[in-house]
Length: 159
Image (cartoon, rainbow, N blue to C red; front, side):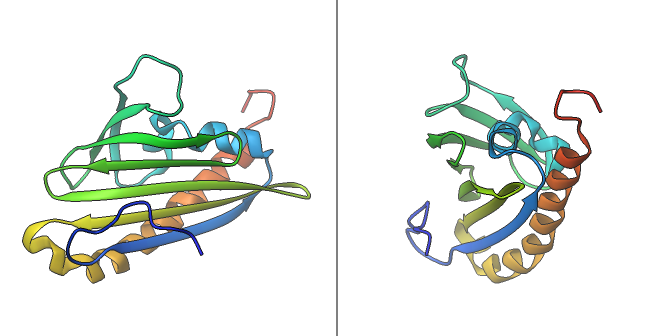
């Protein structure tokens, strides 16, 4: 069982998970998914991502994430272990969230597991069960998009 990325102060924590086998190397999957500037390419809820730190992507990298129907979030990478795992934590005025990506090698590619944890603030806390039901299909679509994008891409960089 995975440990929680965020410790809820009060109220419910919505946890959403999805996974997929991808016919690409663990390194390719990690490099694409661990760079959150790619997220608008595959996330149906993401409008824009801005990297706020100058250093290469890794521990301490911070992003401003702009969603289609939620306030912007500031997130920070709190774990970065290529090519197997990365973790992000973030916050906005309406929520706290945690995000874990784990990549495991398979015989012919990689197995990608994504875990999202969200805790809403204030009166929105009551919406955690609804959020979980709405976000699960969205995350499943997103991981299917990641799989399709990576598998259609030529490993040498051409499409």
